[in-house]
Image 1: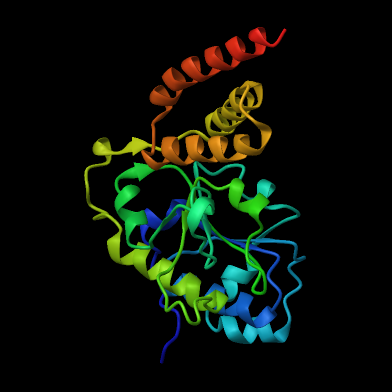
Image 2 (image 1 turned 90 degrees about the vertical axis):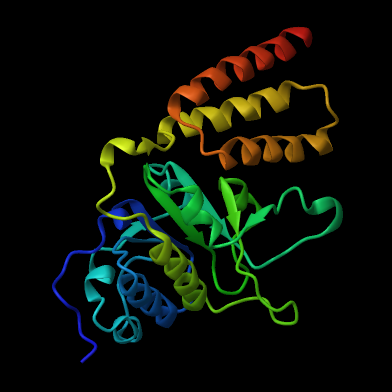
Length: 253
């Protein structure tokens, strides 16, 4: 009872990957393996671990041993998401006041609706249990996601947070019989890299005070990616962004 049935995972989950960055506890890794398979997701990527799983991890994974066996390992978060079209960072840290522009969060139920009927790999990224994702790592993400919790004790256990997000995704995935011709593709990973690079170049070349530049860059990326632009739309935007960056660069010479 409670074993693994030999049926295929949902086709809509084929482009979803769960990324754990520097997880500290083997038990949590095993629990995450189990919970993602509970919701039909079978791709796990781990940063900073070698894949020699302890008995604790194996025991907590239960019937999801193949998730641990097939887990991909990376040295950095950047390497782990380089083939992804959208990178969604998770955090329980919430800031207020003049810092809120960096931590513009969406909630788990919003994500499936934003990504409905689109193609391209989506990464949900979770940080280590004690400190979460660093600001530098969060800057590498296109969306920031938080799970609404009571303010008196807001930080969830790692596997619990993964469970909630996977449940939200699974309960909202589009009908697998929907017309494939109606789908449109998410941003190509290489084009995503170019976009982020050109926005950085634009902001770097601006005459704005240095301490404001990071916030401007962050806001531009968040606003652009929130609309889930397609490749042709980004090509048009890149023409404007690159020309503006060139203009700022020329004016400084």
